[in-house]
Length: 366
Image 1 (cartoon, helix red, strand yellow):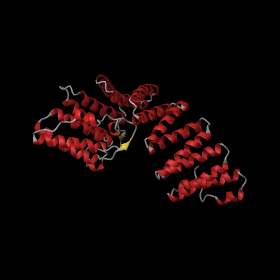
Image 2 (cartoon, rainbow, N blue to C red):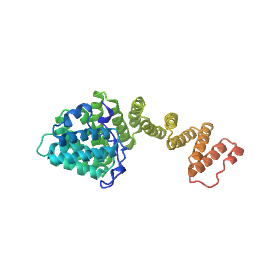
Image 3 (spheres, one colour):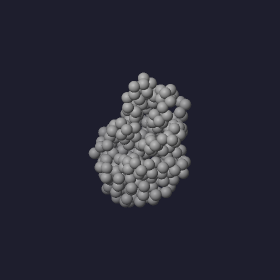
Image 4 (cartoon, rainbow, N blue to C red):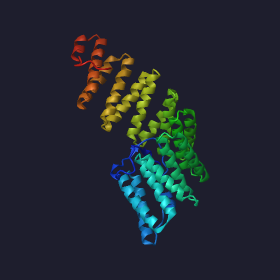
């Protein structure tokens, strides 16, 4: 399945009234209901003989393609123009289709109130139709938007309606999204076991579909739920499978995020060697994508794990690398903290002369 069908882009709140030049996708763990090139043939309108309808259909197709490419500004312009043309000819069903996609674009940009407004307008136009696919999409956007507004009851209400339609349509791909997103709501609400139950169902279906992109998202969310419960062995089991898939898909940032949690989980369990292994992997990925902040965090985690093993010589290697990095990114707090740690590490080795070379200029808050 193409990556565009399920997308977890979202979130910095942007009021609908602002110019659409402010729209910017931000990634989260939501799986949104979109349509791949095959299902779009069923959802999007065919070429029309009427000039207005033909141009509106063209703009709708163009807008959906721009949304899938992450071009939210262009997508909003195309879809708003399409909506205006469909309104001019009084085509309510096609207006609903455009409104559903506008809900997706605004949701992707983090404008949750805007996403709710567009999706509710969409549903109101579909009251007397049997267009279940567009209803499903609109309900999904409503549920996801209400989750981010912390209205968990409404989020569950809409996502459960969405799930029923996916089952009615026997649309397994959309069932994966609905079940996963219900899990996210219950996790946000603090009901971790219910979250896990939904996401486990989602995992079974996505594996049946043999979709690696979707499986990576669900595995990460299952790991996060067990992690939140402090059940680190189970979190590790899901995270490890997630990292394998993320690496195979070259999702470097996703792999880096999960490796961070893996390192912390192993450290908490006292498995310092594994913690070092995962943080070293994260460090390598951070260097590959030139993410200096993740690189600095990885080095910080590595030195803590090395010291826990009493391996001060290895810790010093990482400390010195972290010191150079802190100076490069002009992070004075990290620099002072690392100097203090280096001094303590050399003192632990009994090398007091070397320790004096790393005397911090100020007293850091360690």
